[in-house]
Picture 1 (spheres, rainbow, N blue to C red):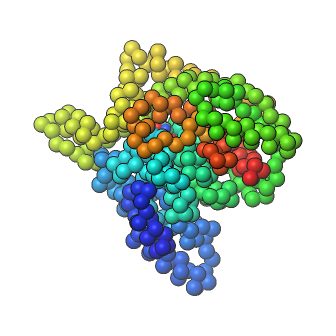
Picture 2 (cartoon, protein in one colour):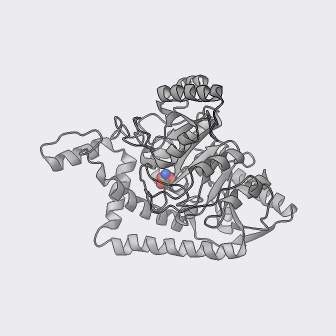
Length: 440
Ligand code: GLN
């Protein structure tokens, strides 16, 4: 534990918002004592892990990488994290990320851009960039990210590790700082499918504090050992798009060939175009985040900046403490929710989301799994993506659709590019891991 803490402290990838050294060393001593006494030990006893800095862990700083919450300490612990602690895992670090999950590069943060584990001139990916890089560099055995529209899958792809966004509702969101509540998911990043399986099992389950949770079945190692998948689909338009990087395309087509050689049927499917997917997702995500972040006005928590009156205080606190990207989303979100716009924009977004969900339901009558690249592009150079927000939104084209569908979806390393995304119907998380094992 001490070695890992040192490695985290000295690392130059900007992955650390705060080290949980005191807590980690105390817990490590307790594990030692337990082992010496011969007492039964938990499933994850002594395993060091990282936590994206959007999860409440009582007594620790939870900043969401924002100026507004720079000095905020959690009053309670998130359900998912508590379950890991109960299983004996040891938290080492609150990890750098895009502020409030807003971004695809982990540059939108007050703690400095996260540097890619493979090439530090490139972005770490986002928004769970610190988490993916920590796993890739072996600073943590696994890390808990958060995925609203791709934030676990995309950095996992950029850093060549596994990252699972489970079915929406499988893991409690209680204690995860809300970005867009209807697609926010808790999930693990790790170096092996087995680690993903164990960690997701520990965190899953119904929670009275999150009414969208459901009771899921444990994913056993036996159940993912043997492939049952017979038919795989892929979206033609993703692969034929002009926007896809040639290396990513080639890796993907090679994977399809390998699968066919192994006797699996591959079907080309029609899907919505990238512009529709990205605009639907951003319309809804901005609306939800504008609503969720309205509570951060300096009254109950956060860095308050006093104005001449209460209205001024709200306004100055929010203007000075939110990043440009977060403000863009709050303004956009309030606009699509406002009278005169909501019918035309927000309701249209909801309607498209239903159509996307229906499309998936029909697809999964024909195929067991949908495969897709994780991103159309390789990781940009640090500094570039902040200049062009629209290009950054479009880089989410392959991940946001599955989020709107609330489906289980995993990034697995593939070839030399940014990973392959394996998606199944709702509550078929097991099938996703099973197929990843098969591809391995
Ligand atoms: N890049 C997407 C966004 O900025 C997804 C982020 C996330 O999943 N938190 O909304």
